Length: 190
Picture 1 (cartoon, rainbow, N blue to C red):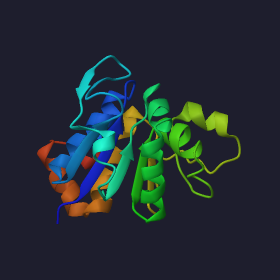
Picture 2 (tube, rainbow, N blue to C red; picture 1 turned 135 degrees about the horizontal axis):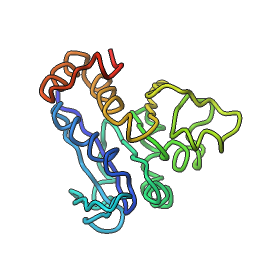
Picture 3 (tube, rainbow, N blue to C red; picture 1 turned 30 degrees about the vertical axis):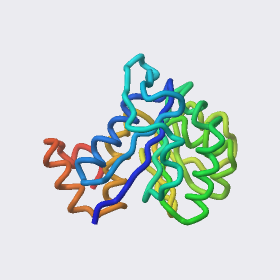
């Protein structure tokens, strides 16, 4: 059964974190909507142009199996400040659906809006210093119930493959990895 994912982006979103998850989820057969805040053409944090599928306001009436929040600055800040998106994320979370965030997004978006209380998570190592006594972990990917978090661009493939495992199964992960000529043993994944 095909799953669906919403990947919101904005000017300043981290390119690798945004595109790796879209690519890998689509390879797994997921219907992925790359939706932007602002305009369809986004300039990532490293200056790379990304074309979104839709504007965020066009898809917030839909139900997605997972919402995946990329990091990058100032992109994560733009997502944090998008009221309709935050309202959607709150409903999505309250309904017990999967929520995923990488790099700056767990702190800049989820922590800022009190969506991490009592949950284990990880984020970019620089941001863990700003949090003090919270439940951050050093793992590349952390799963706490329906929350999946990861550290940054360097863990984007592991993060994306973990989403495939949770949405589908380990066999789907192996199939996707094989199609990418990606040795899972070197990914510290399985």
